[in-house]
Amino acid sequence: MQTARLTITGMDHEGCADALTQVLEGIRGVKTVCVSLARNDATLQFDETVAKQERLLDCVINAVNEAGFIGELEQAQATIPCTGACGRCSRA
Image 1 (cartoon, rainbow, N blue to C red):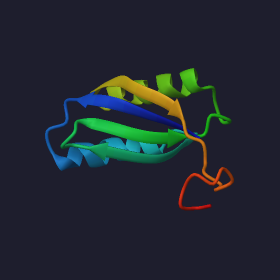
Image 2 (image 1 turned 90 degrees about the vertical axis):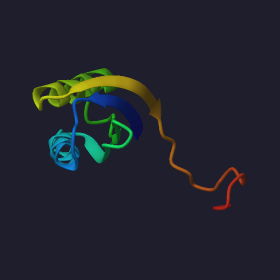
Image 3 (image 1 turned 30 degrees about the horizontal axis):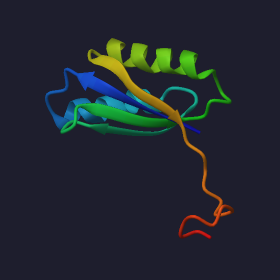
């Protein structure tokens, strides 16, 4: 799984955040979406096996822009699922 965070410009009320959430959830490969009106951002997790990261993020930003907002990639990183095997966390 990969995680990406976008800065979103143009949301004025919670309905904007809800509408944008629905748009982003409809993109193939996107697994979870959290759009925050208070922070003016969106955090999403996506499956990079469905599409290359660069292509998927282009689709996400295009979808944000087509929905009437401005989206800018703030951060993208790999998320490594914890199995507890390393013994460094509470799952060990």
